[in-house]
Structures are given as C-alpha cells and as structure tokens.
Length: 98
Image 1: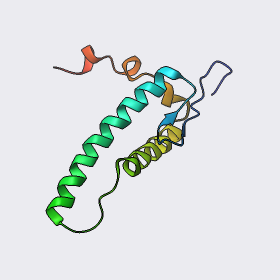
Image 2: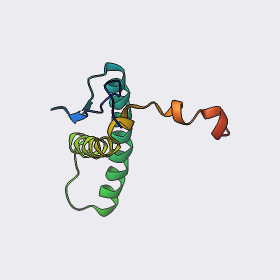
Image 3: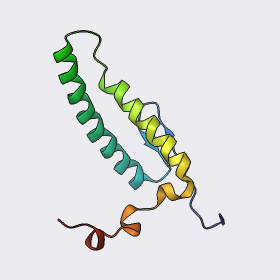
C-alpha cells in the first residue's frame, strides 16, 4: 500500500527523447543508459541496412524516442518500484560471479 513516504515513479519522455523523473541523479543515469542503447541499436541497424541495401535508415533520434517510450511504459507498470536502485534489491556480491 502506498503511503506518504513512498516515492512515486512519475516518469515522462521530454522533447529531446530522454526520461525525466524529477530526480537529477536518476535522470542522468537514464540518459547514459539510453545513449548506450541508442548507439548499440543504431550500429545494428546500420549493419542490417547496409547488408539489405534497401529502405531508409532510422535516425538516432527516432531510436532514442522508441527506447525512451519503452522505458516509460516499463516504469509506469512498475509504479513506485521504478525508482528503487537495483543494488538495493540485488547486491552484486551475493548473486553474481565476475
């Protein structure tokens, strides 16, 4: 049950295609994640586009908005859990081996 102390996960996509949460630290982390995902997906799409030699190549901006909208939907589904740091739930030392 939500209480007055429960953080709410109000997540939106801004006009530049990045997530905004009202928390500067989370916004910066989300921006880094989105940029990493965009570069990876863009490289894959360039390779596929070059191999096919047909169609239009999507821009990084279009890919960024797609990724940001997907993350926005995920955060909306998670509700207040969207703002929980994963290290609080899954300490790296206990669950993952290097």
